[in-house]
Length: 204
Ligand SMILES: Cc1cc2nc3c(=O)[nH]c(=O)nc-3n(C[C@H](O)[C@H](O)[C@H](O)COP(=O)(O)O)c2cc1C
Image 1 (cartoon, rainbow, N blue to C red):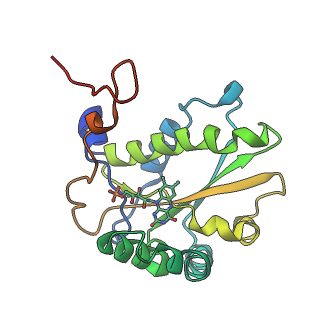
Image 2 (image 1 turned 90 degrees about the horizontal axis):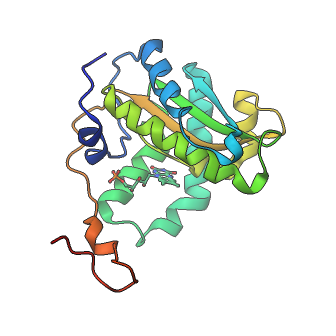
């Protein structure tokens, strides 16, 4: 495990990674990022998350297949013109094979017997954000993806989730195939207001 680069270095560098090298990902790194994930807040502290860590090539291929079909049937046409050309190309490549080629796919799910259905996204996404940041801290690339949940029942079948456990996202983990480049985020001050919406946040 590489030395911890520091919280703000990791946060400020966060990017989605959709192409991975063949370098192995030891279980110890998976342990570390999932432990970080489960330190997230959740409504009523119910901690409704369940994670299925998929290394098995056949299961990864089945997830890749349903990701591709979900993108082709529910995402691609809708995304033309909405995504920048660069992002469209990256998402297209990801959904048609480069994401499922990651050595590890984490299927993140919510156990609805442990939370109110209305809190599923709000109780799972903080854990996923922790997971993404922890992955960055240990030198792994990752991406939050939800397109495969368009075929939630198929995804559930591939990894054996019971009826009450709802798949929420698929997060690939692996060593990035190449450096991700600088993050593309607008400055926080462009969307921050002092006391009242419309009054710019300026720091004296
Ligand atoms: C709720 C959510 C769903 C997403 N679903 C997908 C997805 O299905 N496929 C994908 O390639 N990226 C997905 N993303 C990743 C976004 O495209 C990515 O975070 C955004 O474009 C910023 O990219 P960057 O980190 O490379 O700058 C998702 C992100 C979020 C927050």
